Structures are given as structure tokens and as C-alpha cells.
Image (tube, rainbow, N blue to C red; front, top):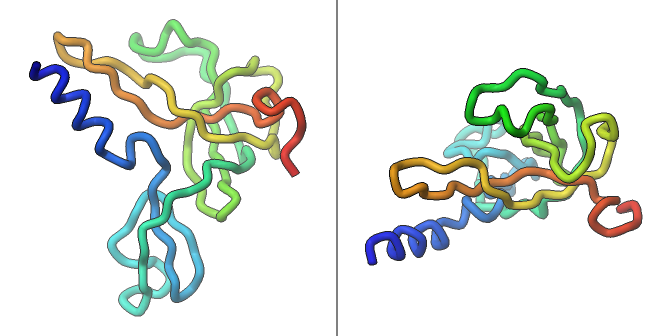
Length: 142
């Protein structure tokens, strides 16, 4: 019963299944991760919670060929800095394509996947990764 309760709690935390950040209504800038104060406007900024669409492009990337023990089964894998369409940048793993296919400027979308397990009960932790838009939709995103 307690395990079921833990699963229910994870589902109620919005930031686990969404990319949550802020939008400053004063300077119209988007931030990830969320911040208590706008870095541009400081205290004059009016921040609101914002759920990013999860669409963007690869700004830069690296192929990981030597990884910690917990990620050795995934080698080689790609970690990229993603520039979301709203302007914020974040780091994420690129999945569902060969590392050789990844390129700067490639359109990607967020997908939510298993990140790891922890504890003796094997509680699964989910988070965002990114996949090429072309692979998912069959056509390039404009």
C-alpha cells in the first residue's frame, strides 16, 4: 500500500512530467529552471509559472563514450544543450537516434523517460530527454 502511495505522489509533482520554468511578464523572458527573481529585471520583474512546450533545437552537444557505472549500458549517448523555442536553454540527453545522426540545429522535442532507479524497492525516477522531431512525426517541424 505504501508503494502505491509513493507512485501517486510522483504523479502529482508537475515538474516531473513537464518542463516547468518562469516567464517574466515585465521583460518577456523565459527561464529554466524556475527562479524566485528575474535575473534581468530583478525585483521589478513579475514572474509567472510557465510550462514549456518542449520543442527546440540543439545548440551544442557531446557524445559520451565513457560513463559512470549507472549509465554504462547506454554508451555511447548524446548530451546536448537545447535551446527551447521560447529562448531558455537546458541540458538533456538525446534519445531515439544514433549519435552520428545528431547535429547542431537539429529540431527536437521533449519526451519523458526513465532516468534511474533508487532504493531497495527500485523506485523509478522519470525526467525529460529529447528526441529528433523528424523521427517522431515523419516530417520536419517548421
